[in-house]
Length: 626
Image (cartoon, rainbow, N blue to C red):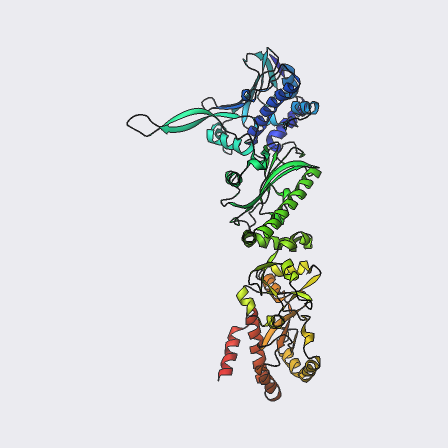
């Protein structure tokens, strides 16, 4: 028996790796299975150049065996095995990777790739085991060797007996502690769950003895328990199959199996990229909004695989926030991983994949919009708010990506329309894309501010989401057409009215409006004659970038106190109420104050704004009645 100690730097690395490199203890099984897969791959590579070595895939597998009584877990493979020298070099020197050396000497062929890179994955076993025993017999060797270690104290190597080529790794599982339940790594259901999560698409069978139940024979009936060896991994991932082999049902089943959602996918994209970076991806757009989607608890991201091994559950770097609803996976051989294979290094490959995925998602949504409008509108009702937020977020950096995907309700069509559809049917004399904001379409349709624009025959976009107007403000224009609120102080169409008559009315009523402005000091910026009102006596409009609807949204936020739009009270000088105002101005200033207060409060109610003093308002109505 040869007894050796780890070098000082290896001891420190082992302690650090056990305690901090891996964030989840269950990762150990992924690492050991990946190493076993590499060992079988090495035989495959040898067979490519050695005519005497025949690679029959049915002869190669990985077997997982749990022994609860003796608290051992064994991972065995029929791979290339290790000599005494291999054991000393690959297991005796931490962070020296035999797989990496082999990978550098042999180019990948026929889609096979060695998974291991760093030579530390094996030592993750010490996170759950007090003792690790490795029995291995190398291809072409008559002698097997046993390597054994209890951790940082070192290891022993001695000759032993083993019938077949390959490696068996046996872990003596730790006893439970107050903080950790190590028994779970001896439970069949837990082991199967870890294998399905991380190693389901390892290309060789992973076999386990599993428990089942079958009907008893005889008159008593009932069920009896039995055990049989089964292959517990899928082996061939759906994303590596040709699209022509797959049906919609296959994709839907994969969506359900991976638990991307409890609904069915609305649509999906299967990507096979062979350009500057090689990767496969399947991207799903869900049918329904996840219950926690608009909460802080929701975590975006795609599953990330490297050569079929799950590296990350949710890789957020692969999706922009505005496409955070997308579910699915990416598998690539070109990723630069950190030493634990749990996290990505931020490099060019990742950036290229993310950019390509963003483009694929947008193209799929555009195709859906063009070819299946009903389905797209269903998607937009679920996730349109996120697209609008994407326009507003990051100071409008993504507005050009998203503007063609937006939908708004049309005053003419009475349904959702795109900005392109709106612009394409604008009359030649229409300068702006007009919009109106409110809590519902029904409420917007009753707004006095829409009268002039509607009277001109111009289409109005109805904005009913609290994010809508913020997104529109960030867009500023679409196809060189500027957006204009119907509540804007300048609609760009008032000039059609009789300017001479308008200026005369303005001069004639100057003192009246100044008196009303004084009465509403601090509440409105000014009072003026309206050019937009037809049948309604009064309305509120806003000057500047902050609209009344935006004020309401911002005030509802914790930090929104004190935010106020510059409001203007507009009076319809052609309405019969205006004559009462003039009479009061000339004969009864107290009554003018009463009328002004009533009109202002009426305008607030129309806008859905709270009355500053509801009791005063009701008292004013009573005064009018008596």
